[in-house]
Amino acid sequence: MFKEASLMFIYTETSLHAGSGTSLGVIDLPIQREKYTDYPVLQASGIKGAVRDWFETNNGVEKQKIDLIFGPDTIGGGGEASAGAATFTDGRLLLFPVRSMMGVFAYTTSCFALNRLKRDLTMAKVANADWNVPTEPQGDQVLGVHENGLCEEGKVLLEEYAFDFHENNDVKVIAEWLSQNAFPNGAEYQFWKEKIKTDLLILPEDAFKDFVKLSTEVQARIKINNDTKTAATGALFYEETLTPDTLLYSAVMANDPFKDEGNRPNGLKNAKDIMSFIAKLNGNRAQFGGDTTIGRGIVNIRFLNGGAK
Image (cartoon, rainbow, N blue to C red; front, side, top):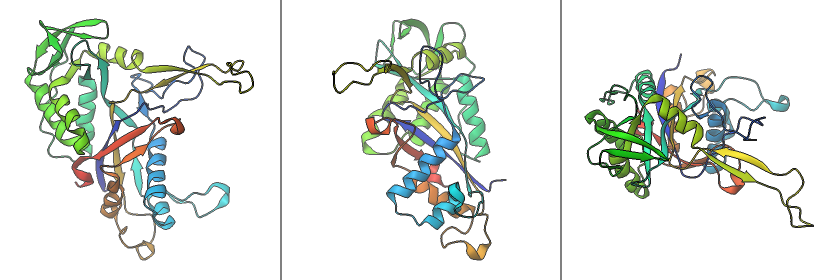
């Protein structure tokens, strides 16, 4: 069992395509989704690979340390197989941006997503999550804060759907906590840290599920024939992406390295050292998913409490 744990919040700055392969549906390249909720998800293997790549390409970390934390690369018979000391869970959806008639867009979530975050915070032994999840709104109601810029005459219009706005103090407390603990800390994020305080909405579960399923970006892509400068035959396809300003999170866990203590490099002797090392990613940008050469998947990482317990 793990000895250290933290939450890593993932804020998308560009569209993100974590693909699930080809599909026989209208969308040729859909994104990864949870089976039972249909929420978008980042599979743990992709997160682990992206984090490993960041350390390999940005910090010049010795291969011995990389192998100790993430596990050795044994493809082709190289190296002795052993498990890495770090564990990552799937990246779960927390906030999804939805177009609004007022205020450009709203940060939306659901009681289910918030309750799951609360459970994961407990698993990570986080002590400062002193907020409560309100009762799920019913029918066409949404819950928000009094100071919001999304409501007009008691109504909130998201996409083409109208909802009845209800003020709720629990939403205000949750929004404040997310602003302080989940959003990146850079000066360029001050606007977004203030926006979440006023423009967070808790939707009915069915409405939130519909938005995260039907309001993702779907873009047509095509290959051009260099000789004729026209579309190549059969080269048109549709690709789904998560929109910018989506917030996800992954639980990061660490154990003592699976090597004799005498063979462990300095600075990586135990689980606390492993967690502190991974938390160097805090406040930095990484690239997740596919289509990296067209700017997809640029995210900003925020470790809860900087990665410290």
